[in-house]
Length: 177
Image (tube, rainbow, N blue to C red; front, side):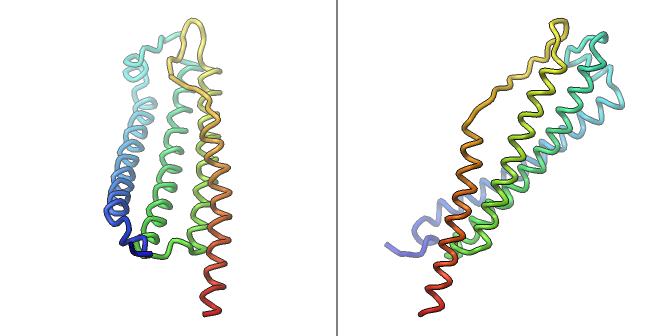
C-alpha cells in the first residue's frame, strides 16, 4: 500500500471533490431561492404571506420575523459557501499528497469560525420564531437546539491546532533531512 493518500483513496477523494462542488451549486440555488422569496415578501407581501397562511392581522411582527429568517438564510448560504470552499481546498491538498500544511490548519480554523457563526445564526432563527409566534398566528418551523454542532465547532478548533502542530513538525523534519 502506498504512503501517498492520493493513491490510497483516489476514488474517495475524487467523489468528495464532486460532492463538494455539487453542494456549492445547490447552496447557490438555495441562496437564489431565498433571495427571490425575500424580494417577493417586499414587492408582493399579500401574495407570499397569504400563500404561507399568515393572517393579515399578524403581518406586523410575524412578517418582520419571517423576513429576518430569510436574511439569516442568506447569511447562512454565504457561510455554507465559505465552509464548502475551505473543505474543497483541503481535499485538493490531500489529493496532491500535502495535507499537513499550515494553510490547511488555517482553513480548518476558518471553517470552525464559520461553523460557529452558523450556529449563532441558528440560535437567532430560534429567537425570531419565539418572538413572532403567537397562539393566534403560530410559526410552524421545525426548530430544535442540539449540542452536536457546538461539539463539532470545538472539535474543528482542536483539529486545526493538531494540523498546525503536524505541519510545523513536518517542516522541521524536512529541514533536517
